[in-house]
Image 1: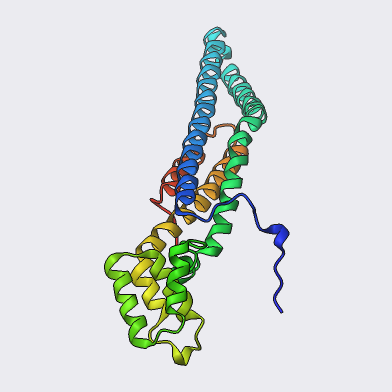
Image 2: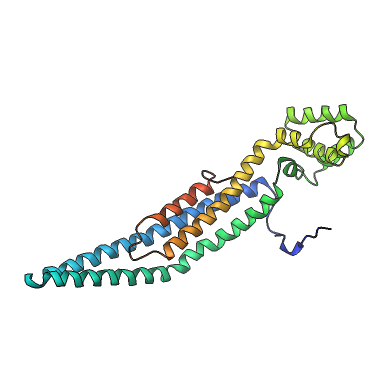
Length: 252
């Protein structure tokens, strides 16, 4: 028999579309803030690079013409060394600031991963609509002994009126019957009623997850950057995380 580790089930993740919207919105905020933080740090590195370059050229200009070739070589070596040290120092000093955003981002991604397991299909998601609602409970009681025609009529009514508690009750009642006694496919019915919403919900959840993974990739790229990190790869990844959090580039 399959077992469930109930200790691993989060108790602070509401199973609502509103909460999923909140997760997506918060992920967008964190991705935007992270992109801004990376951009600011990259700008500091760029300014340091320009400053070190100017100072190296100043050393060369102040050297006697006959010695400038050697001076230029030495100055360039010093410039590269100073920039490398600056790059290491700023990566280390900014780590806490970056983690300040990545930690809550990780929690959002974990919540999205959990919710995604509960939205595996439209029928699974629809089955959770209006749980505990008296209207849905009454519908289920009325439909328990219904025949095929009555269930089909109820299904058409639910679709036509967008009555989600009725649709959820129908899914429960029909799904409890043996497959050879079901008047129609639960999956087809749920897809018609909840398919669009299910696609939107799963896209948002996947967007949160992909955005966090991309933000982490941006952070790793920044952390292992060389003396001149302005290849913009880490910044491009951070910008991509914003699009993913908003559902623009999430993958299936």
